[in-house]
Length: 358
Ligand SMILES: [Zn+2]
Ligand SMILES: [Zn+2]
Image (cartoon, rainbow, N blue to C red; front, side, top):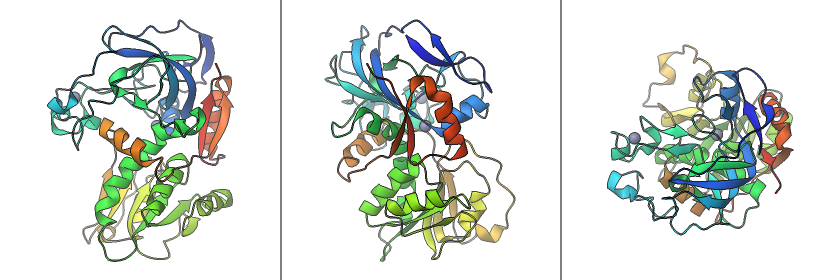
């Protein structure tokens, strides 16, 4: 099969003919139809994230059709509730009833140990031995991929392959970030105000869910990026402006998607007492020193790491109801390097997606 392969970090992906993977006992073989391109892919290529499997096929926003099951994968999956793997209960029926030909999505979380402190306490996203798709195991910048059946999501039929791909990371991580901010956004006696720093793939999805929940969205973009500000307003942002500006009103919470540490003090300046700043990225440049009074007043800073399967179940229930629409720019598989460069330069509206026709 054809795959775009990372042979070493800090070098471009190479188109290679590689052996089509065979599904392991718990896995499904998937014909990849689309795969989203995420900033995390860029961090892996650049070496910001260390020790990837090498050579590596990147890509953790896979949409594809099941072609085959491993020996154990077509049985009813492990009952996760025994291990407390979802914060809100069991994710056990996720892959139940999957058949050859079904369309599924494969996210960043590719597997967990099921038995560590975190797995036993409803935080499988923090599992000590988690494996991540397109990082420790090969991902979807290829014609075929294998994935643990218990970590695949059925994809809502209202989305095309390409439209669905960004839901698998941008959507899921964005949704988890919004949930982290939720305690300071609800029940406050007026319309809540949410700042989004970096208006790309994740923010354009979160904005739609937030607006659907009657939250005012304030979009912060790179200074001078008029196109990004216009893009945010087109999604219903109440205000869009440069990230160096303070919000026109006090915010209840801010979610930072851009990998820029200086946005933490910048966003704290706009967040009210008791408010929250949620850092959604897997990597950020160093956070500059800032005066304590920005944090004072019970403001909180937290990060969001990975996802649980329960996040996926909830998000794929919510997304078609909003309905979340995704803006995507399509690239061919062999143009993956070009897609990564577009993401790096910010020269994209919405999400970059590789389309891999059958
Ligand atoms: Zn991602
Ligand atoms: Zn674990």
